Amino acid sequence: MPKWFQPTTLLCAALFAISPFVIANAPYESTMGLVQKVFYYHMPSAWVFLTASVICGIASARFLATGNPRHDRTALAAAEMAVLFGLLTLVTGPLWARKAWGTWWIWDARITSSLVGWMIAWAYLILRQYGGPGSEKLAAGLALFGMANVPFIYVSVNYWRTIHPATTVVPKLPFSMGFPLLFCLAAFYLLMFLLMTLRTRVAEQQARLDAIYLSLDEQA
Amino acid sequence: MLRAILLIVRKDLTVEVRSRELAYTTLFFAVSCVLVFAFSLVQEGRAAEGVGAGVLWMAIMFAGNLALGRTFERERQSETLRALMLVPAPRPAVYLGKLTGIVLLLAITEAVLVPLVALLFESALLSHPFWLASVVATGTVGFAAVGTLFAAMLVRARSRDVLLPVLLYPITVPVLIAGVRATAAIAQPEFEVDVVRFWLMLLIAFDIVFITLALWTFEPVMTD
Amino acid sequence: MRTLIRAIAVVFVLTIQLSPLAAQTQPRQQEEFTPIDQLPPQEQLPAAPLLVGAYAFVLLMLFGYLVMVSRRLSAIQTEVNRLDADLKRTGKG
Image (cartoon, rainbow over all chains, first blue to last red; front, side, top):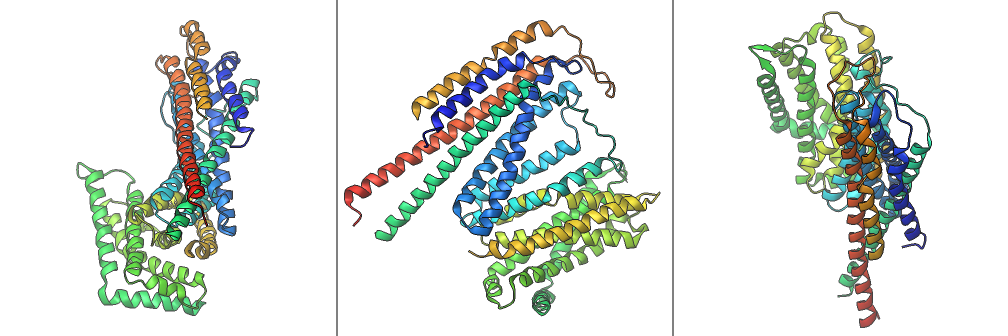
């Protein structure tokens, strides 16, 4: 592991440890009360999920174009990030919604699009796991299709509810880039970066292991 | 290239006409689907309001999934896929040829499905046949475009039977939404042309984008 | 690597205690929930379990994933080192 990994991990752990204190001191939101504080973990999760999906798509495109396995490993790590943080988003969202809007789920454009995007990321992992040999390229194709699909999913889901999209069902979020939010964003993005480094390292070592076994077979 | 496509389509048609296996079994499966939906959704002898559009597209997607899997299974068993890839025709021709075959198969199925669903679910699907045909055609082409690529990709993969729907359904969500919404708008008593036109434009855009994408990725994905 | 994981474990256990948030929930629970005007009024729901549940879920999942990947990395690393040592011993050429 590179030298900067350990100190950076400690920094990230520290950020997460401090975050509850920072969030507790955040201004109290008048309309939604205490439960709004889920927002400080929910929104960074959503942003990391989207970023990871984009990284996966781009890395897959580069992998299909060049065949360099490094891009494939990045795509795999990014997909795992997308599934992980997407899951966090999709669980913290309803927990917040239950209190704020009185219902666990709502077929809003953004939420539904996220659900579909998450399922595509999950499908990517399933394909990599169970597709057998050669599934790297297939999964890259899937990721590419998934990325190309984003505008279509968003538009179709948006207009699916009503042909007059002027009314959005989700009340406007208080998008004040306050310090607590930036703090949590930093913590989450740092964590994503660290986890991706770790995961690509695992994939690298796995590839090295496979190469060693292959060469042993050939020698025997 | 056009000749190559036509040759591939003719090959598939010749095989099919002899046995008619794919057509009959896909058709029967689609009709069974409609029956299952009927028993699930009909209450007190009447179908629920406005489910006709949804049932139609569910049947198309399930039957289509099956047809895709079995078309390429046939290629795999006869090892003709390798032969196809060795053909001196441009690779995209292979893709387009298979796509045309699937679309024709689904068209035959839909020709039976649409009147059946309209009848069983008391849905005024056939009130504007031109619009319905456009919507169903573009939707089928979009579904088949993605499906043909994925099914070809998965031919040599493990667990290919279950992987195809796992990959296909999330990606074809826009087709499903657009198809159902447009069909439902057609079946409504007050016909709103703008609504149908909007969804039709979306479907056409989807078709263009994804056929292009499939043509680009067919080569790198199919080569080992 | 092991000490690193232990350090992170300690930090996460402390964080999961969520003491500052718990302290804050005590006085606030009496406060009336003001519904947003577009939505119908809802029954009284304590926010604290939802909030704590959300945070706990996030931290547990992240921690769980981190542990899983770290363990896999150590296992693979050990295997690679072992094979490398074996190869050096038997001589590659």
